[in-house]
Image 1 (cartoon, rainbow, N blue to C red):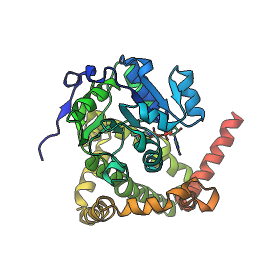
Image 2: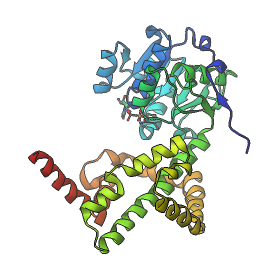
Image 3: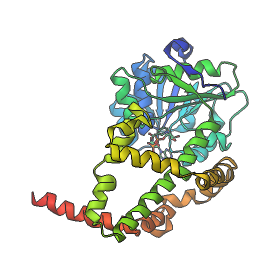
Amino acid sequence: MPSAKIYYDNDANLDVLKDKTIVFLGFGNQGAAQAQNLRDSGIPNDKIIIANRPDHYAEDAKSKGFNVEHDFAKAAKAADVVFLLIPDQVQPRVFNNEVAPNLKDNAAIVVASGYNVFYKLLNFKPSQDVVMVAPRMIGSSVRSLYTKGKGFPCFVSVEQDGTGKALEIALALSRAIGATKAGAIASSAREETAMDLFAEQALWPNIIMLFREAFSVLKEAGCSDEALCYEMWMSKEPAEIFERAAEDGFIQQLKHHSTVSQYGQLSGALALDGKQAREHFKNILYNQVLNGKFCQEFSKIEADLEKEGDANPLNVLYQKSEETELGQAEKRVRARLAGLLQAE
Ligand code: NAI
């Protein structure tokens, strides 16, 4: 596999956005950050429309001086470019019913996540451009890094080149939101979805499981809940380790630890052959993520995620997870700490 291409400011020409009407569908985490960055990059305010249902996000957009349109069909009719920045699970319903039928034949549609494009849940016309500009950062950082004159990591791709100019547009938009300053990495909806869902469904579940089991084993050996919570995460040591890994290197960060720790970690990790984990990971990647099985299952429960109490499957998963030894112990420790803090 060759190295990925990286695009910088010099690869992008903001002129291709001249006279284009740019619609942001959604003014949440990403929408608020990207719209403000784009405006601060010189796109005139009267060329930007925030399409948002009447809620506190719409009020926020108004308070920041944006033109807000509650009628999605009207906004879609005016759009040359439309950023889809509402939650992934509601995009198919809202886009396919209210936006797509009203979009120009040569409009550019921008997604910030590969999910709905990779699983073909959105209805595009072949003449339209579909691009992905996917910041690898939460919205508040997309905004704060831009205002500090810094870039942020971002994936960019062309998923459908209806006009023959999709890459130019994708790069200009990436530059306008501040994504090419530090380098936007050429990717694809497939790659982004595979990595994202793999992390969420394979890597992090294993990490949660390892912490849960480690907690129980050490508790059984006589360690207190308080000591365990602090030792394992409340001290923020794991957060610091990952921060060092990003700065110094995944392996080199170990040099900040004691020699006993370095020896234990390196020899311990090399002694684990990882075969079982590798098979498990492949199974999740090919038989759950890439073949669309998870997407189909998730689509079935999507409507239930708005429900209250046990009718919402996410609430049930939270309840079960909180019932584990780790979950119960942490609740006790946090309640006790809250008491101590109040007494101070
Ligand atoms: P969000 O959860 O902040 O979205 C809120 C916005 O969606 C508001 O404008 C709200 O009015 C609108 N909205 C919510 N439900 C709606 C509905 N039923 N009908 C119409 N509008 C509705 O969204 P977020 O987190 O900014 O995600 C947007 C996109 O950005 C997604 O594709 C996500 O995967 C992607 N992304 C998000 C990141 C993040 O930091 N949260 C990071 C990178 C990509």
